[in-house]
View (cartoon, chains in turn yellow, green):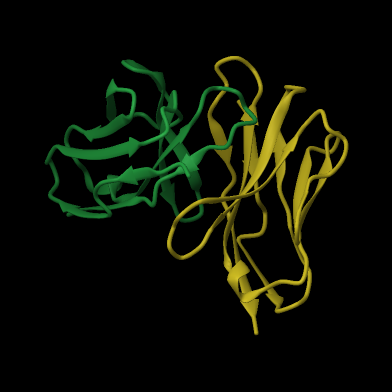
Length: 116
Length: 114
């Protein structure tokens, strides 16, 4: 079974600075997707960014980018120019590409605080 | 935009009661999921369904059952609620089992069992 680990329960960053959230995962599969979801106080889960394991290029969405290290099974999220609205719980998640493997497996979450 | 609606945002139930949590999606998605979210544990999968009347156990199915009689609706049932089922429950859906598809979430149902 796949596992996802986020070793930082809490992180903080100053507004306009850059912060990196860590995620590691364990799998024996070679084809899969990785995701970062954001959960603000409203509790609505919002997809931030996704990465396909077969793509070597790191995904980028505006101020959000990932550092995907397949051999190390590491998938970190970098938030540049942090804004107050980035404050939220962030979850890393794994989804297998195998037939029938449609579930998302989540990490424990990292609570990000943005200080003005 | 895809909308996943959980009909009850906040519920308080007594130990031993039968509890129904309802979830409806409006985009003809095949896959639907029920997760439970607890502090420090992230989201854990209870059950998922990949078609009408089809269901599979997730990681923590004990004490729960599900029903999917129509494609748009996926219900989570607590046959006899217990205090350790106090939690937030999140419903989700995706178009199909292609792993790159986005999984969309509802806003969550806070359940307190007293």
